[in-house]
Image (cartoon, rainbow, N blue to C red; front, side):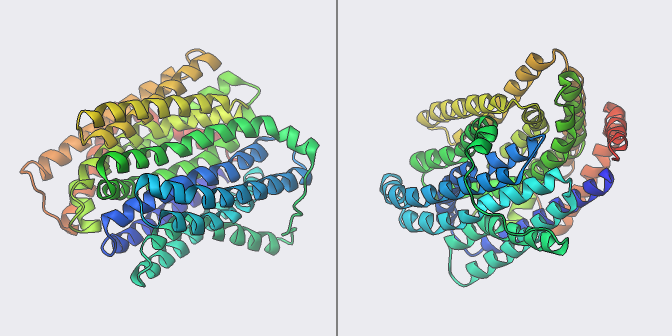
Length: 481
């Protein structure tokens, strides 16, 4: 069964990545960097609002040993109240931010997009129910289909001249479609579709400790992209922010797909080990190393092929996005495997460790950006992003030592050996395809780069970390139930 979940999750990740990339290819040729920059600021604020509305309750409901309908009713009530507060705040803060940031029409974009957050609570509850029932195939299907539909709508909106709205729909419309698709599955199984929206003080208190800590963590984590966006806009302008947006669009689809499905699957395994911290951390390390086998070469490969891939996808006018995307890819490649330690801390009932990691990362990001920006360094956005990711890795390893001394050492060594193979792959791509400076921008050249990367990485990994494949395979076999 676990292998079926892995297969469904992999298919979900592939479909979402393809849909988002394909829509970006079209939209980037229609809209300007300034429009992308404005959408980045709006989505940054939306991300903070959305994080407060749904994610804390999803994690809390998934983590509980006993769950009653009253818990679901209370979560929906709280999320509805928070959505109302977000809409009111968008009316108040939108015009103020528009003037402060010098971003025309920011207010109306924020107000309109905030109404799409009404479905954030139902999505969180429906996902939590599916995660507890281990219906990961349904989760994967709903995520993939909602992303495909949103991508199609985004392209149509861009072609019809709706500009920034098309970018907002690409990111936010899946939140609306997902609970609708989940309701169809519930109806098909003959289960209750509608859950009353009610307040239960006792049930809220039961989920409150976990929820408010996870809420704070998610809030800080979600605020990091928004803060970076406003800093870039203030120091370098909307056009540079648009270049950062495109760079993130090369990185984020793969990161969100891998982390979204990976966290759900890992959490279902880790939550059963919450009474045995050493085993919990050991399993989290094995999952991290297993994910690194695929994630590290994927992001390193994206970074190495960016000089060909990005111009091929988005066309001319986005040259500054190439070095940005390379640094962002390497940063995410480093941090993503270690994110599963935070999944372990969440399963362990210690979301405060995630809050510490996101807070430290945010502070380090802001400080590094300001230092470089004041010294007239246009590398500030990329370096600040990298600093944030590295800081979260350091905190994750420190917390692992606190929970179970030495539990993360073996996995860290394995991940380092995976990185060695990935760097050899990147070196081979650079020597073969990029040594003469400007590369040949063609689909054939890109396919040759990918093929070369797959062959070199596979052969090198057999030398540097054969055990990585074997350990992850044994992990899957041990979780068949």
